Length: 99
Length: 176
Image: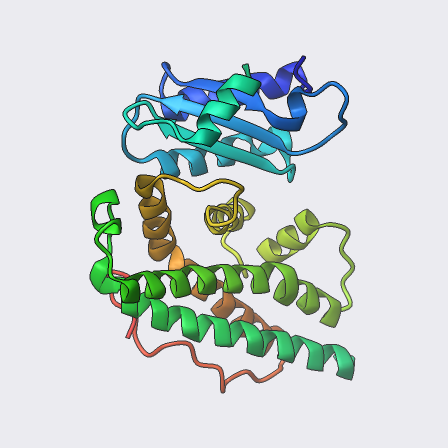
C-alpha cells in the first residue's frame, strides 16, 4: 500500500523519467509505505543509468514536482547503476515499493 | 512613514547578521575557488585544510540562505506592517518587491541549500556536484541580500550604506 494519490505518483514517475532517463526506476520507502502511519515525509530512491549530473537532475526534478507537492518534505536518494549500492540504497529497495 | 523603533532595530540586527554571513561567504568563495570545480576524484585527494575550507563554505552558504528566508524577509514585512500567512506568501511579496528574481528562482536557491541537509550521505560524485552548484550560485545569494539593501534604502529610507558587499565582481563569478 502506497500512501500517495495517483496524481502524485504520476508526477513523481514522469519527473524521474524526464530527468533521470526512461530506464530510471523510482521507489517509495519509509513511512509512506506504512499503512499504520499518517502524513510523514516522502522518501524516494531512484536508480538511473546516468553517471554524471545527478545532483542537477535532482534539482530539476524538485522544481518540476513542486506544484504537485508544495512544501512537503521530500527526500530523494539517487544512485547511478554504475556505482555500488550503499546500505541505505539496499534498505530502500528491500522495504520500498516501485512507483 | 514612521517605523516602529523596535522592529527597525530587529531588522537591522538581522541584516547585520546576514551581512556578516555574506562577507564570510564571499571569503570562503574566494578561498575555495582554486580547487573548483570539484570531481569525485579530487574530492578524495583533498587535504584536511581544503576540506575545512569547503565545510566553511557549505555552512556559510546555508547560513545566508537561512538568514534571508527565515529572518530578513519576515522582519522586512513586519517593518512595513504588511501581514503574511505563510512562507509562500512571504516569497511572493519579495518577488513583488523585486528582491528576488522570481518565486521559482528563490525556490531553486533553497533547493541548492537543501542539497546539504538531507538524511543520508551522498556519493563523492554527488557531493562534488552539490558544492560546484552552490559555488556557482553564490552570487545569486549575495545579490538577494544586496537587493534587500537597495529596497530598504530606496523605499524605507533607512540608510545601510555602511554595509558594502564587495568591490568587484568578475565575469567568471569570482569576487575581489
